[in-house]
Every structure is written in C-alpha cells, then in structure tokens.
Image (cartoon, rainbow, N blue to C red; front, side, top):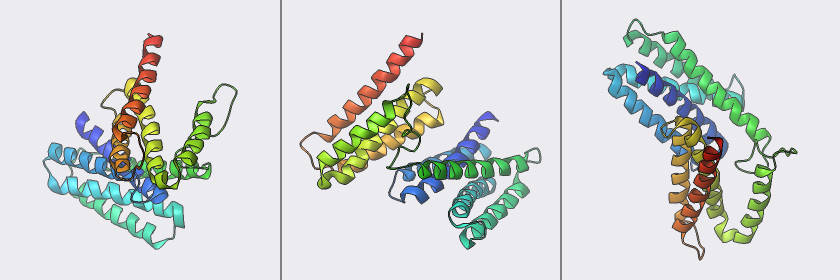
Length: 245
C-alpha cells in the first residue's frame, strides 16, 4: 500500500530530524514540530494498519533509532544512552516483525529507520560544524553567482542588533519565520502542497509565529510581520514558477 509506505517513511524521517534538531537546538526549538509530525504520521499509519501492536512497535523503533544515532554521534558509539536506545529500537523491531504480515520486508523497514536516523544526524552535525549562527550552515559560502543567503545573514545580524536585547528572543522567531516561509513556498511550488518538505517548513513557520507573538515587544503588529514575510516568499516562489513556464 503506497499510503502505508509514505507514512512509514515520513514517520521515520520526522523522528530522525526531531532527535537531531532537539540535540542541536534544545527542546524549546522548532524540533517540537518534527515530533508533532512524527506523531501525526504514526497515527495515520496506525489507522491504515488495523494492527495496534505493529503500529506501536514501528513508532517506537523509529523513535529509538533516531535517538540512538543522535547519542552515538554526540557521545561516541560506546555511550550508554546510545547503546540503550539502539537495544530498545532492536527490541521494538523484533516485536514488530513477529506481528507484521509475512510479506512485509522487515529488514528493509529496519534499514529505512536506521538510515533515516543516521542521515539526519550526520546532516545536522555537518551543518553545525559550518555554522556561525542559527539556521545558516549551508549558506555562508560566498560565490560569484550566489550572494543571496550571505547577504540575508549579513543584514539579519544588523536587524538583530537594532531590535535590542528586549527582542532578542523575538528576533529568533522572525528569523525562523523568514527562513521557513522561504523554503515552504519554494518546496510547495517544486514538490507540491502535501509534500513532507513543504508541510514541515510551513508548520515551523506557524510555530515561530505563535511562539514569537508571546515575546515580541515592538510597535509593529506581529501579525503584520507574518503577512509581510509570507507575501514576499510567495511572491518570489510564484514569480519563479511563472517565468519558468
């Protein structure tokens, strides 16, 4: 069933990014959205499988493989938390295999979880190694034909300084809205409205809007900032599509 495969894959990827992003940025970051989407796809999978025991064990296998790779990368392969998470993941996979349909390629499912987990973990570590500020790991390198992200980062630092300490936390959410709206619009136009990449960025955009509203202390309406950002990002994405036709 294509729907089962889709939700299984998205559950694994969202869990992988949830662990990687929580380790990198903390529980109060937009990693919360990764976990919410992990649960969303787990519930969809449960409804499709009509097998609560299988759904339960698949969900927790994905979760524990995600934390296993994150902890192994952070603390070494012999670290107790990493080994414990790996053991728990293997146990859930064994339980899932016992109750799964005989036609299911459970070794492939396990590899899907394991590789998704390592993929997110290694990607996040690679990006953090190149970071000088939140969000911009891949965008600092200047080239003759790409000045967009470096210029954005340059001016965003000036905006952060002008907003001052009282809006330091709000700035992070403005920054989060900007980056996620840009990627949300681009991915939606490229991959479609229901693609995982588009949905995740828009949900993170909404997370930063809702969370930032509580800490923003400025003269401009917070909702106006949201509309300005989303309007500009959609304008650019739509213009790119129109010009390519």
